[in-house]
Amino acid sequence: MVKEPRQFARNLRKVPTSAEDVLWQVLRGRRFKGLKFRRQVPFLTYTVDFLCVERKLIVEIDGKQHEWYAEYDSRRTDEIERHGFRVIRFTNGDVLSDLESVSLRIAEAVVPSASSYPHPWPLSHTGEGKRDT
Image 1 (spheres, rainbow, N blue to C red):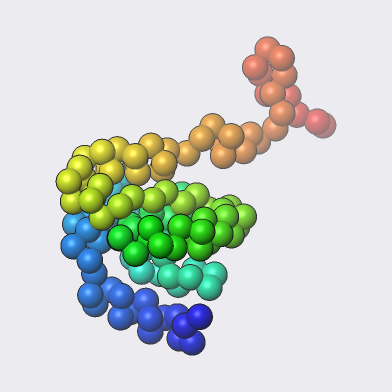
Image 2: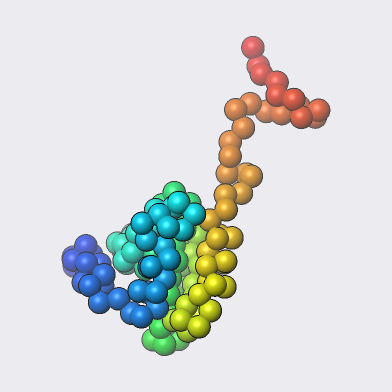
C-alpha cells in the first residue's frame, strides 16, 4: 500500500499512459456530457484512473500488466462497488483503437436510471400523486 496516496496520484497524473491521455482529452473540463471527471484520484485505498462523483462512476484503463492482476482487480472492483460506485474497464487498446465505442459505453454508464430519482410522494395506481395529510 502506498503511504502517501495523494502524492502517488499526483505522480501518476504527471506521466499518463497514451490511452489515459487520449481519454482525458475527452473527459476533462466538463467536455463529456457536462460532467466533472477527475483523473488519478485516491479512492478508498486505491488510486482510480477517472472518477465522476456526480454519477458514481469510475473508469479504469487497463494495460498489459492487468492480465497478471485479474484477481486483484476483481476484488478491487467488488470493494469499490460495495461503496455504491460503478466501475467500467477498458484496455489501452480499446481506447487507442476505438475511442468512439469507449465513449459510447461511458455515455451509457452516466445516464441516470429512473430509480435514482426519488419521488416526492408515493404514486397511486392512476399515476397521480397522493399525499398523506
